[in-house]
Image (cartoon, rainbow, N blue to C red):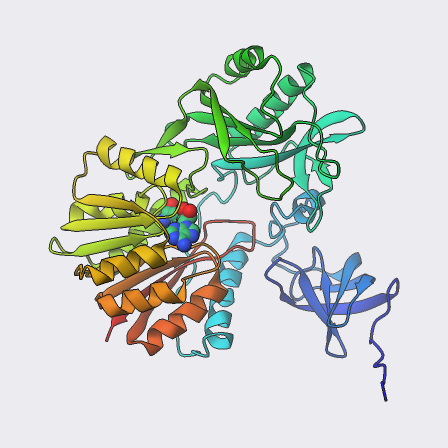
Length: 458
Ligand code: SAH
């Protein structure tokens, strides 16, 4: 016989609750008879009256009707657009508390996922000015009431919320988006319509070198046509003299992926340059580049210190992007091998090695799991392996090949604590001891957590 268990809360009802926790997305968590309600803009320790908006089997969503008691850690100038779009979902929490929250997220995964409660996690390395740090913006373009608009999607939707102040982006990037938007309106460019896959301009992407101030504008269009683009380009450069690269990326497909495969250079170079530790880097539109430059320097510096490199060491930089980690440490070691899947990134990496006159580094295009296997079969002797994989973490074949190569140290840089804990556990079982776990705040005001782990062969 089927019994229906009554849910302890009902939709459209009000409840007075105390917030006990914060989720990975930055929702406050309250419990009614053990059943969780996720509440936007509510912080641990707060007592709120909530209206339940949505009820599911495992949990509900609610909104705050009134605060009965506020947290002492609340920064009282919350902007609901930044919370609702997910641009800065934690900006209402005082920064030192954000850093503690990130440290405890990493502690939690090591306890819960890796079942290694003995692992101790260092305090998060924060940012002095944790605002206006992003060197890149990817801004969707849509038509609202017949007008081309730029902004950000509401969380879990594709409803555009028009914005001009993005808070965590370089202010010059915010300004550039508004300028380009005005020029697109003037030339009557049609905004993309996602439902019908019609219209033309899908995204405006802006990148700005943190140190060089070189700016790249990418116009992502559905069709190759961009009527009067010569005139548009002239206006963009006239209003934004920092611009050294304008690219049209053509993307006809109906998908959430932002960039298409084909691109045309409309103005200047196909890349911008920036520097890290004084070394110059070419960055193409399609290549990955860390979005928070000053924290990237802290991240790499810490990772390199953990490795305690010597002039005899042979190092692998896996998932190397445009080669930034390998090139930052090449002068300290004998030889570096980089591997990366994206062709454009490897093209940039090779240019970067040349531009910095670094000769003891080589790069291979391919999936890290295959190339690592190949290196293992070639019996390359390796002392230290740096890995910096995407969110899904390391491929089991990659781990297998790495362990076979017996490097003394592994430096694992991760943007996803859950897959990091999973992989660290496997590596621990295969003879690597977790020596240090260091979160670095690459994404202030958001719930994203970046972590460096030093693993040492026993
Ligand atoms: N270490 C670099 C890039 C890190 S981002 C930096 O700090 O800038 C992760 C990189 O891994 C991206 O450039 C992505 O293209 C690449 N990548 C993703 N999956 C991969 C795979 N299976 N093999 C090799 N590279 C991969």
